Image (cartoon, rainbow, N blue to C red; front, side):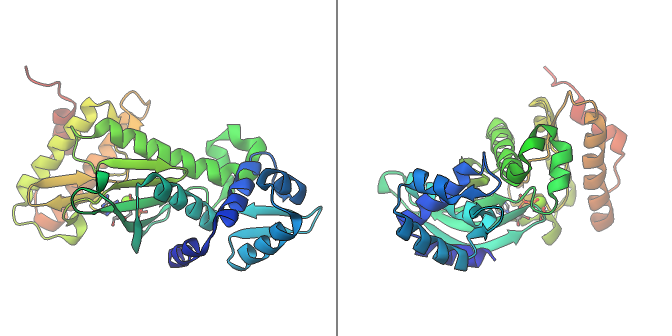
Length: 298
Ligand SMILES: Nc1ncnc2c1ncn2[C@@H]1O[C@H](COP(=O)(O)OP(=O)(O)OP(=O)(O)O)[C@@H](O)[C@H]1O
Ligand SMILES: [Mg+2]
């Protein structure tokens, strides 16, 4: 699916982008953006708009309704294209590569960023597009009741909010905690450094005990920042020779959250269960929790 987006993105001209952006902005106020509104916002002549919309519809970037009036909507593919366009304009990325992950709530691509001031080598980076709100509008609505009167806009809000939350917390953690550095955030998308090594679940560790201790020491640092990951698993931890990097943060909670301990316990149990099963390492979750929460020795 995202392959299409990349191909389509390359074919979009500035008028196409102006139209998509016009629909995006107007969707704050309309479930279906009326053609008159779009004419006003894009300042394109009707014939151009009509022609362009027809092509965008074919590419499935714009959805059209005829009732009760002619109106337009965009969905994730167009939103991806708008975020990509912003990243390219800002110089955050200069080329897009392969898709490397599709989760329930995200699509992740490889990309390239030119070096600052054109000095040095271009850098490989990761783009993560959030997809919250895609599967069930109702779910999103339940969580965020302030969106109730804007249900048609809720997927944009949900995905945008999740991306901003993730970017903000990763900026708060970096560099004290080993997380990929956030390079940019726009709409529902993040650009970040490529994590080193490979995911824990895909790796056979030679010294699992060292990695388990090291991961626990990272969790301690996370806790000192006032944060609990809340979705920790072997799928969200990268390992390399020198250590680990923890990814996938949008569901984090603050340590003063009323259920903070439960979230932390679940994280710790997940981690210990994994090391227990795969490497026969036995640790007491309660003790690990205590060590994570212990104040720093002076
Ligand atoms: N910084 C990164 N460097 C390298 N790979 C990454 C990075 N961030 C994400 N990925 C890849 O993309 C996948 C999905 O990313 P992430 O875990 O953040 O999203 P997610 O929505 O939780 O996906 P899932 O539902 O599969 O867990 C990861 O499992 C990993 O393979
Ligand atoms: Mg994940």
